[in-house]
Length: 272
Image (tube, rainbow, N blue to C red; front, side, top):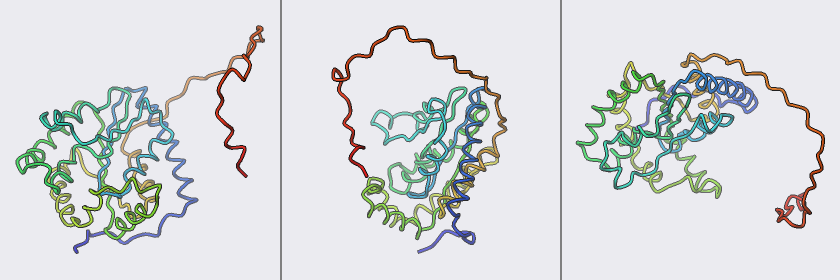
């Protein structure tokens, strides 16, 4: 089986430096969020890659300390019968940010160039129409002032299979393993060809792809977040000073008897 060409694998990033740098970067993401909100910017970040490449984990770390009213994740389900009759990009346009918002696409319009192409969920005509329209669509977003960033998480076949087995054996992760994931093992080369062809048409000067080596999840998250921050011209926004007022003196309020309300049982009391 052909393998993707990969650079020499560095040592896995240790937990302590990872957690230290992740927290620093997350502090910067909060500053980025405030800049987006105050300046009325619109930021779209596309996360693509093979199954189990680490997209979800990266998104989780990006959004961990952000305001969900400002930064939200768009993870669209299978299109409805009605949506299948719409212009292909239409349901993704509905998810685009307004001023002061960030949208992270956990998979995106590139489904057509990946899983739909490989699994035969679209026709050849629909596929080639997508590759023709996609650069124009993204150019329109950029010309409208949207900050568009695209990340491809690249994982080796051996690491992908290891993660699949981990999901299979862990009841807390088993829900992540779908029949479509299993199918991707036997179609590794098909997905490789589809990704290469997609890059030929959509890795443009206006909207380039940024590849994230993701066999080491910690390193991938750090590298991706650091790169994203480096590409946005944000600056720290001075927050207005907030002072807590003194608590007013009691004015005779009496709490109702506790036995009139239903309390959650103290499950924690039985723990060691």
